[in-house]
Length: 324
Image (cartoon, rainbow, N blue to C red; front, side):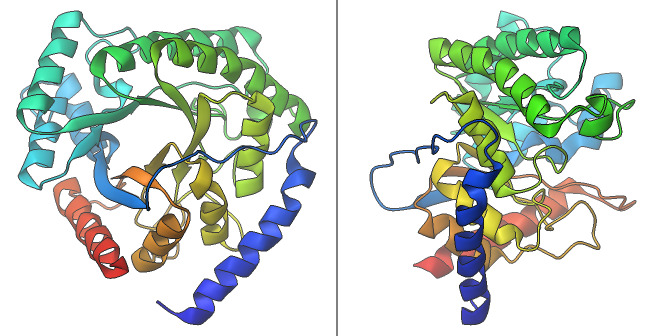
């Protein structure tokens, strides 16, 4: 670990913390960190989205690619203790899967000594179309109940657009003011969080490099939602600021789930993740739980998730061991 880089991250963290109240829109209430018992302890897990291409191929033709059960087998093979099973890859999505499928999956992961750490849906709470936002709320509620049936404690949702027709949140929002759009999002997320509380599932809002590009922006939205069952999913590759590690450090005390990425950006040209530095930040923030890895093709024609996930898994395990 380079002392100077850690000092730089701490300085930037303090700078961002000082700026946070300025980015909170109409909300001035500070977000309360999660009360955790015991010393920091976290374990690399897997986000099924790493196998995007193979999973999609299997949905189109069951004789090709890999299904979610195959992803679970991959976890067992590599001693990965938890898996985040993205909702898109369940048969019939966006409809809820049949009870028989859910029960089979629960038994399958249990027999392999694995737990389901989360799931996720596609939604757009940035759009100016109220009907689309309402559909996103209902979709999230349906999958909160699916998550509860699976035994998944967290469901990941997006803030900004996930449609091919919207290039960014401003376009989706019809160039509405940021504060107004944040209000729409909070208005949609609050009933999701209420439903999550009812079923014991936390709603995790991901920074996806669109509406949420920094730690203060992430905190601002969550403060406006103002619900203890709504927290951040920290995507380490989607804070687009001068010092993404400072944004990550800001969010660790509030984190309810993770996506550990290979780079600090959306392409292979982005800076590679410094795993020892990242592990130190997560440790210093007192996090306890799983930190799912999500690798992406990033236009690599030779991309093989079975290879890339193991690379990140090994690097994270070594970084965590180095803390001891």
